[in-house]
Length: 192
Image 1 (spheres, helix red, strand yellow):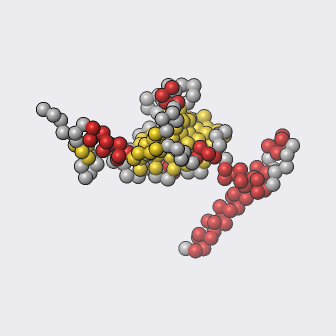
Image 2 (cartoon, rainbow, N blue to C red):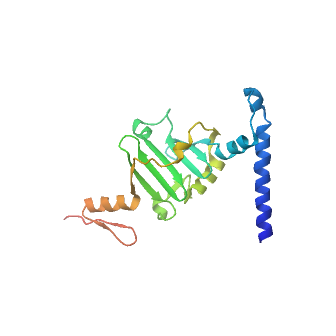
Image 3 (tube, rainbow, N blue to C red):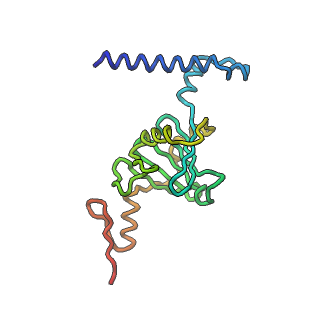
C-alpha cells in the first residue's frame, strides 16, 4: 500500500513539475519579454482560476470561478436582474454560502446533509460538495476559460452575517405558528 501511495505522489509531483516547465517555456514568457522562474510557474499552476458559465433549467446564467475545489459564484452581468447581481456565493467543501452585497446578510447550506427534495441540483445531478460541482462544471460548463477574479473572492467575507438553512426554516415556521420536527420537516399550525 505504501509503495502505491509513494508512486502516486511521485507521479503527481512529476506532472506538476512538467506542467510548470511547459508553462515556463511557453510563448507566454516570450510575448511579455519577462523571464519566469520554475517557482513562479508552479505557483501559477496552483493559483490559476478557471471561469465557466452555467445556465440552469430556468435559463438563468451564472458565472462560476473555480480555484482548486472552491467555486465563487456570481450572476452574469449581461443577463441578470439587479436583484441577482446583488448576490454572490461561495461553494467550499460541503458548504454553499450565498449573500447579499448590499445587506451583508447571507445563508449557508450543508450540501451533504440536505434532504433530496431540498438538495442543490445542476441539470438533474445532485450536488453534495464543491468537488461534485467542480466535476459537473468540468464536464458540462460552457464558455470555460481563464478567470480574472482575485483570490479574495475564495474567502468568506468577515462582515456578512450568515444564517444556516435550518435556522431560516425554523424562523419561517415560527413566524407562521409552526415548528420544525425532528426530521427537519416543517409543521405549520394553521388557524381555523
